[in-house]
Length: 427
Image 1 (cartoon, rainbow, N blue to C red):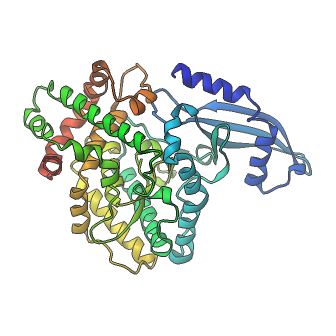
Image 2 (tube, rainbow, N blue to C red; image 1 turned 45 degrees about the vertical axis):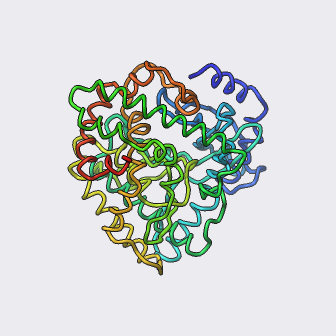
Image 3 (cartoon, helix red, strand yellow; image 1 turned 90 degrees about the vertical axis):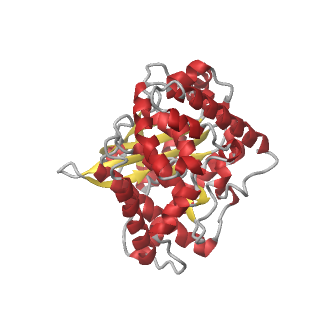
């Protein structure tokens, strides 16, 4: 943990924010009781943000021991506190906190209601939001999925075929419900539309991120040149259009040519998913976390990001088409079940859109793939990763030159080239 982040955490816990009043309001909402009906006996906070988990927030589990005064019953409640620290001040200009609060408090409940009302099906997409605070620290309080039997998979291992298909089914249902909501209400909030959210106030930050992507691209290319068997791919990647790469965040949110618009998660990978297993150790449900990057756009953004980052190395290429077809079947079936009245994309439409959004392939290779494969004991400083585009060579060697990343990349490159993704970024 960086010194600045550690100092801000000390300030957070030494202040007057986390007090009885804070937890009382959470218990009232969670149990649907009045304040006079219970007493807090003990509160315990434990960090669940491990080294190199690479969150933009600090996440804590809180176990609250209470007594119900009418019955003398004792119980322990478990919640999760997500704290976006001021060290990421530049992200405030992109409404990440407002966006995530709105997702938890409005969009996701509306999607679940759409499934109940129109699909006659109970679908839970994410933990319930119990409280949010904007000042002096941005805090979101959620139900604790772990206490309800959910667990996170190992990012270094990746998801099995069954876990991948379950995650794609949940994503398809999320996208379908969002398409129905968009058909009725449009953009809903400007901060859910990346193009509308580009303002004079945050334009300099966008330029900063563009510089970061170009710097990362050159660092990636320099490391790739040192691989002993990738010259063919190096030559193609060296011809990537840097302007396309720097503008990826706006390009990839263009809707599909057939016109359908969905709300993308924007950061759909296994560290933002928690699975529940049955007695036979088969995955039976998955719920989604972290909606700071959600925006209107195309399913291809989430599909590229998820499949390149989160699937076990020994199956991700072999079952790629099966995964895409599974997602499409679930998406098409969900749209039909929810009464979506406009054109439903064909499988060919989806493949065409994924090629059209090839910028997301580059982003996934440069960013999320190295995070899932990072194996060094040396901690990644996320402030450095996100905000500082003038990174040193040692940093790039560490993230793009480690053996786990190289192995994963060498599996992807021939496949991506065969599908035309590397060519689509050239020129």
